[in-house]
Amino acid sequence: MCGPVITIRTQRSLVVIYLIINRSNFDLTTNMAAPTREGTANDVLDVRQFLEGWAGLVGNSQLQKHEDDDQEAKIANDMSISREMVEELASVCSTDTLLCGSEPEEGNLTAFPEVNLLTVRCQEESVQKRENDNIFRTKVSRKMRYKYVQTLAPPCQSEGSIECPIKIPETFLDQEFQVIGSNTLTDLRDKYSCVADFSVPGEFSEDPDMPQDNRAKDLFKSGFFFIEGTFYNDMRYDDCRDYSKVIIDWAKEKERGLGPYTSAKMETTRFVDLKLRLGQPYVYLHQGECEHLVVFSDLRLHGADDPQDAKAYPLLVHKSKPRRQLCIACQTMTARWIVHGSPLAPEDPSHFCDVCFKMLHYDKNKKKLVEFKAFPFLDKTAVF
Image (cartoon, rainbow, N blue to C red):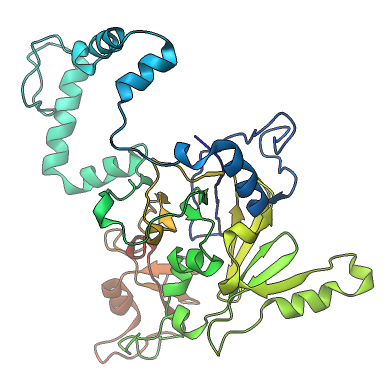
């Protein structure tokens, strides 16, 4: 891996999204940006200075892919061996040598061998039960490892399909998203999905069939990133509010002992212009009170093996696969409503699917049977 990568970790309290990160120690030189222990933030890094410094050391030729390069000749030269030796090593180390010659052309994982082993019999019974019993299949699926983490492959692109080539050298941020230095903070915000942005505000207990057309992200467009003492506010729209003003004014009071803090526009700030610490938790806030932690964990130069189209960034590379919120009554359908203060519900609040919610709380004339409040619930699986 050559040069700078930043990893971003986001997490919201209670429900929403949390991203799994593969963290790596950042050790560019013996005395630069190396955390002393796992989980410790390092000194402030100037991304632009990092880019310019490493670009001069590495050189553009090492960051670009050359399709016509003779890889075998390069290996032979680097290892000071003959080309024939390289070809022999490629043959000996080939994955084909792992075959024994008796493998079936098309493997069938559900075709069990005729052997008298308890483990094989149990697995065969489990597979048959999953085929015939939907409830059992669902329970098994929920317990499978890695079910709730999804790794996304980068887009495959030929040289001719690239609309906007990456200008070498370039930096990018890597974690849940890969972000190049020319991306703005709003580019990342627009790509990041949070269920709070898609929720429908309002209380619907009097008329649950009322249209739910307005989404929170269309009504409340404000938000900010807080990075190294600066609030980067999204001010692209006329109805955007400066969330940071009240915080900055509050921090100015002498007894607080905080600040000084500054503010800037999110839409005009590029990642290459940031000064940040690797491993330091920062904050992304939107919808008034929906907070996410943002951690830059790695920084490197954009390389030849990375997607070369600038329009592909910010690039989503990892995302969580959230569990479906089931209806508390039928335990089968996905919840559509969250109900507060209902004496008919077993918990407060409770999640209900549309059918159970209406059958329990309304009569045949669609009148409320008891007093309660109902809010539309958007399951995370509908967003992610």
